[in-house]
Image 1 (cartoon, rainbow, N blue to C red):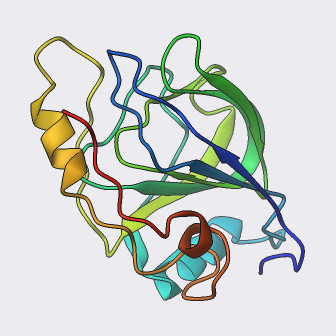
Image 2: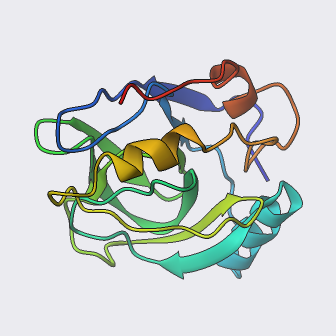
Length: 179
């Protein structure tokens, strides 16, 4: 169940020449979820599914830079904490901990600076979309840039659904990637 007054942070991560990143902001909902002691992962999975974010996974966060070019991604911390690096080297550092949810636009590189399983998460994708994994290798672009430009704004927020809050407020305008 979401808290009534979440702290929502927006981070704009620009193209750094290696990672496309996005004109859409990364959204970090601090302490938005009040998780039950038992079956916290199932609780998050049900919340995400109710709001149309499926193809769920339960795992840690990869310890290498990666991004998705064919979908956006959301994940919630079930337990633990870590520091995430957004956007590639010299990017934005954020503390991510139990009860937090992050929504990462297609193209934004993200990396766990701790150990992979220091934080356990449930993740999902709008409308259960499949995902790809790109690591900034030579030759990925411009194909990934084209993929990103074809990813639509989700119809709902993974936490708030169709309420005008979070994603539906922050991601109003269609955005195109400059190729």
